[in-house]
Image (tube, rainbow, N blue to C red; front, top):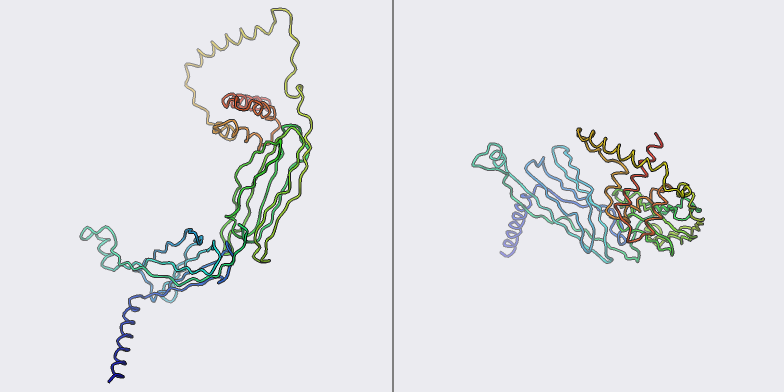
Length: 379
């Protein structure tokens, strides 16, 4: 009698299980590129949902990309295919574990199912239905178990570094340009700006530029940072260093550039910076006084004549627009230094010496006058 009761209970359990799984015409699976990785090493993931049919009534909402204290999860998109009348959705991600240890990640997905009646009601507007009606079910995705190995470096992957100096000899206050390029594949997002400190040298720099894309093995491409260095005396640039954990060698690697010695020659002379000044005339009268008279008369006549017409404001573009956008003397001087044009050297030297007394308005006026005179000379 007990045996019969046991078999009856078994049949009931199987029947209940079949009812439960029959209500889920889909199966989720997981593929991981590795089950053991180092901190900040990329792990490629593929979550695949296989349906038993075309699954036209099913909608998947998988929003698991993001960052926590344990990981960063980045999406590489979704691919939907239909083969032999069966739908398959594949979601690709790249996981960067942030802490060492045996880690388990189980994400959730929202499976939404509607009905044909709901679609018809929505299309024809029956009963004022303005949207589909869904039956939602939260489903746990397959478990991801990873052994995360620790190390002491911020960056993980394989990288190379190239540091270039455009010249080793300059005149005082003439900028020297230093470019740092880091190439490779790995967790480029951990890359931080370099900071240079050199006694007696004014250092201009902008944030590093990102030129890389996400792959299964992490970010691949390059990272670039530019510096402009200005001084009135000789100086030395110490070797630039970058350390990272090499996943192929399984050890710390230190990249180190050479040191650079920069020779700074004497500053521009007064004759180079200024036009020749005529000797003062002891007489109270000079013929060039007539220039003031003619200028005044011409200004009055032009003012009366041009006031009859309406002039459209000239559209400012290019470098002039960059000048107008600068909100401080330092930001404008930085742009002039980075451009590396010797024409701006006197202005840079002058306004650097003024310090806090420097006027942004006056600097812009002088700069526009310089650009205007150069344009006239070229014509």
